Length: 437
Image (cartoon, rainbow, N blue to C red; front, side, top):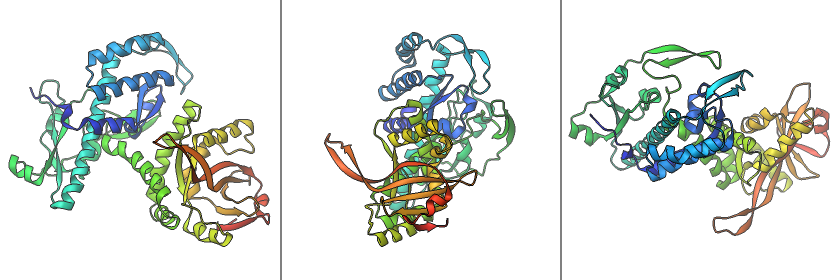
């Protein structure tokens, strides 16, 4: 019997991709879409964040230390039992309000958690290695990188996965968007990374485009009918490597906006609308973590950038920002949400705060407050009112560096916001920089 060596990918790559995952609380695995499963660590019915954290820590330790399944269970079971997350219990389904008898922790569930997360993390790490190798070879020798589908050919192997065994296609072939393994619960399939020279050495030929058949699947949690590839379990028809890195790419690009000159950063964001979507994706997951934890640790995220017009017009008021990146801290997020609870009529909604990167990119207007220097981003809202977000330019923030020393850094900080009457924004103190009122 062929044995698949999960250590074929450098453990560091798998660990890094697992560490980038946020925490997602869900009652049922169908509540979380495929991309979210790859970007977040979720255990159905682990409704308490501390329990989810305990399970995540155990998986992280298993990745780092090569922990066996038996040791994984031995270490984790006492903790879960002590916190009451074990056996069958009556639990309220938050989606329906229905009380149901459900299985919480069990040896079988821990085995599934262990297997799924380790295999998915190694698969994501291997994808990253294949992409990095492709870039390296392209610049050095012009060679390409290919993936070969490898199934475990024993009595437990699904027939469809057996049929895909030996398929060789370029790493950027759309087949891998939906068929990059693992492709289901308990799937042991993997891929082999190959170059042009290795194809010739092993006598492998590039495969013709595989026929892709699909079927409809009814998601009983969302009420939607989803089209999924035949032979792949619901929730698995995605590339765990691509899904895991998309949100990270958005975060990395957002951070690069901080270091870029204002005019360059403004143009970079404006020239590629897809970047806004990735920044939004990354920020939304971070936002959800901040809300779930309910306390601020001092982390700050980039949520957008000034437009080229805004950067140009700021010079008219002797304002030369150090950079064009707009940021928000977890403390400022919680401040905005506290305003929502205090006064819903004058506060931005929680969904609006969660969608800040998207909202900023499509703001109706940008004003400059001449009496209290700041930018005012203006948005249309219901009831003929306007939403506003106040962004302080070159706002000083004291941060602790990697050397332990505290330093003052300048950021463009989203500080506060709310709902106002449109006429309030037409006062003489406000000057229009971009857009229309």
